[in-house]
Amino acid sequence: MSLSAHLPALQVVLPLIAAPLTVLLRRGQLPYLLALTASWLALAISLQLWVQVDQGGTISYAIGKWPPPWGIEYRVDRLTAFVLVLVSGMAALALPYSRDSIAHEILHEQHYLFYTMFVLCLTGLLGITITGDAFNVFVFLEISSLSTYVLIALGKHRRSLLAAYQYLILGTIGATFIVIGIGLLYLMTGTLNIADMGRRLADVQGTRPVLAALAFLTVGISLKLALFPLHQWLPNAYAYAPSVVAAFLAATATKVAVYVLLRFYFSVFGATQIFTELPMQEMMLLLALSGMFVASAIAIFQSDLKRLFAYSSVAQIGYIILGLSLGSATGLTATIVHLFNHGVTKGAIFLLLGLVTLSVGGTSLARVHGLGKRSPLLSLGLVICGLSLIGVPGTAGFISKWYLLLAALQTGHWWLVALIVMSSLLAVVYVWRFVEVSYFREPRKDLADPNPLPLGMVIPSALLVIATVYFGLDTSFTIGSAQQAAELLLEGVR
Amino acid sequence: MTFSGHFSYFITIFLMIAGLFIVIARGNLIKKLVGLGIFQTSVYLLYIAPAKLVGGTAPILSPDFSVYSNPLPHVLILTAIVVGVATLALGLALVVRIREAYGTIEEDEILSEDTQSDGKGPHP
Image (cartoon, rainbow over all chains, first blue to last red; front, side):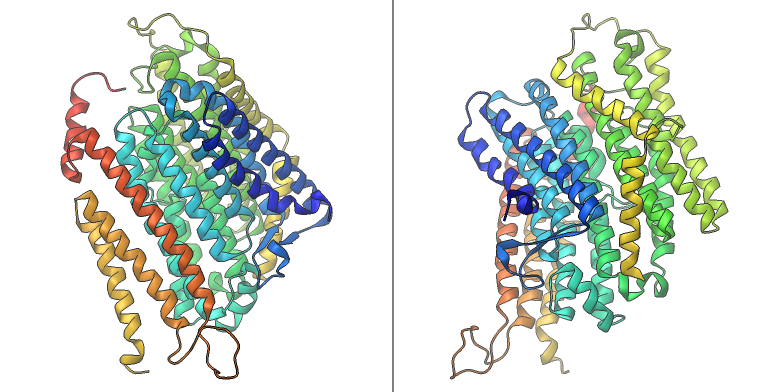
């Protein structure tokens, strides 16, 4: 077998091996260089996988040559490849940023541990995405979660410890709910392979353990993806984590959880008609809408930019779930494309907020007074990303909202169009709060003259801001992938 | 099925709810972790109990035995136990750090300390 046939395994194995090596090579720049190499290789592999799937269709890789459904299967389809590109791409941009960023935020002797945890987190997220085995999902979920707790606890402020602890409690409850759900499904079907489970579940549908499994999985995964009202862990975790960690998590962790939800709903429960016999769609619609409105409203009243954009994340997850709850191909396309677009936008925002912290010493609204005069480009970048959150044409956010509106119209929910526009107005309000203090207030007098910001942090942030605009203009990659992924997911339902 | 046939499930569900209740109701960070441990342990039972057959033996083929236990859930739970240990260890390590930073491990006292520190000095 040539090397290219083993890419699905290498996607996960390379960062997994890099993690312990960074501990062994603890001195100097070696851990950084190793982590950087691992993440760039992961990006190269995921792009290569995307091309392979584009040309040859779904890839099935049997770990240890044990054929599925007995052995563990790695399965790369359109959706998998798309999410892999998002996760590894964000890691490849966050790592160069991290070197200068953590120099200001994390004790020097802990730097190598930061890289270990970061690479482990990447391993977990890639593993969740690529695996075709239900129990494997749980194992990788815990690898990524445990490393995430450590990454959050590395924050400078002591509150980061409490944020990490609270996330640990809620995250573990969520993961345990997911295991209970997987266990019940295993008891009913006798298989752990996701595709095989989907086929066998049709025979036992409607039985009580299967319904209980659906409930446990829904709650567990919703905790992980911070679906309103299970989002309590998210604002503190994002606000007190080191900047680069917040950016990486905001862009990938909740998005991968959305991917898990899609996997279980469509690939496992797809054939059991849960969407026609149970009020799942109505329930998800209600949660998505309340998330969109309540979280946006809370965001307006935040006095710290990190918390403001963290609540905005909860609201944006509402949009992602809204597309899913419509149950149409267009709605699902909107979900998948917003998963990507919001990941890019929020990643850019939190990377920029890291620069803001460096420039003015904090991210509270009182500190960023006059940022537009002090650092015009930095402020402009945040405004562009803010426009993407609102959904202004020419930004990535517009594309997702456009498909969401199309889906709402196609399914005849005209009132939903009004609600989506209204919640976007709330986004206008919270983005305006930043614009107001940044452009219409005088800079604080007590701040030293602006130092030139480190290029290692500026370039990744600028690339992501450009990506936010680029994916709003050229949608061939995002919409193309999302449409095909949505069709593939809906095949399981029919 | 009789009550005795479902006995292990009753125990499992009791432990599950008891653990979850402790996590929610207790303010002491260590006690919360104890509850979390009980909650996770109940899941081990949920997996293992259905895999065990009365009179079943380890799945090594032999003419002397005809009933075997399913080994897969045992292996899965071995993994889950490792995950549980890692979670508990990390949780306890965090509690140690929280105690160093705040001087207490009671949730309400920590939160009130944070609210007080909001009032004075510039917030970072």
